[in-house]
Image (tube, rainbow, N blue to C red; front, side, top):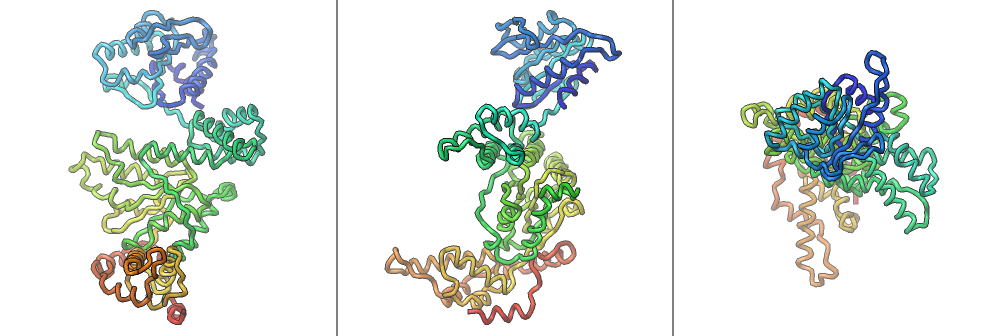
Length: 527
């Protein structure tokens, strides 16, 4: 626990701790608990209790471990440092709120005074603890300050500190299962955010249904809002189901097995947490759609999309920080699916990174790959790629992903299925079309190319309709004639696709089961 660590740091004589957090009250309680537990020195002899003060530029300096009055007019960082040096007794602890703001481009006077205070603290058993939402330390003092990580509350802490007291005060009766589900839903939120989300769900339930209850869906909704504020990942709302994904039957079957690995029974059986998969293949063959459908097949867990290009920033160190923040964010939102779209765009150039960008790309790749290898949180990563030649070899090493899938151009059976899906999606009737003829006419076409052809045919049919309120639907022969004016990627980029297939033969599993002759014959006699 953080209180125990603070106790140890204090006993060891550390002069200054920096704890980055948004939860000032929660960390304040932990600090007080850690310091009050010190009743004996390192030799086991009784020692006086620490005098604990809190300072901010608006509230001044105040004693927090007793009701002793402080100096509410002390609003200057120089004044509080001088008080720490000249007034505070040995063993005193100063909790400095937002003091990092005065260390961002500070004056030489503050830097010198801060260093003097740290040297003084070591010889007088004093300690400063800086609390702020971000780490700001000038190079002159960064080696003198110890950074202490303060994690978000665990699900059990959320239940004990927030959920149980709020349920008692509102009269909400929680079963053990509901208590656990709500706490899990609040994972990744601060105690303040979780309390607000629960209060909102209580108000909505009482006003709309007259019930005294908390809602998991509202808690999840509020978590999504926090993700949007970060700008590092995008929440993708998907109402798709496996029937909206034409073909790729082997992949869909595998996702059904992965879903079981997210269960509590799998955890109890000590099965490893699923890492994720890499989907490669020509553009338009359903990789992105597979990522959207997977979140549904894995139990309707949230889906987040990360554009690797957005990770890069102009300030030195900011790109690596963005990558780490993105990882922390999705882990806090777990269980979830993280979709790394066109991953090769963000990971290419690592070998020349030292010459082109000072090693930024290489460090970002290292951070991501290490996380993929070591992660233990239930974040299922689905990476997609259109160009296997740009994938770094270390990404394909065993342990990064559970499976490597190859989504090839749809076969004859899959094209019939795709045509049927496209027609139904626009409220058409597939029975009115010769689906085998359409499938035969679009040999070598990707799913997205078939969708574009269908849309073009509907636009032409709408344009020639006399009554826009009741437009005509395109006919099979019209669609076939229109297809002859399009050149699919299988022809314009045949060499690239063939190289991808050769790579997949040695590296990946086919996402589609082999087409049998009996299946092909059955397609041709469909009506």
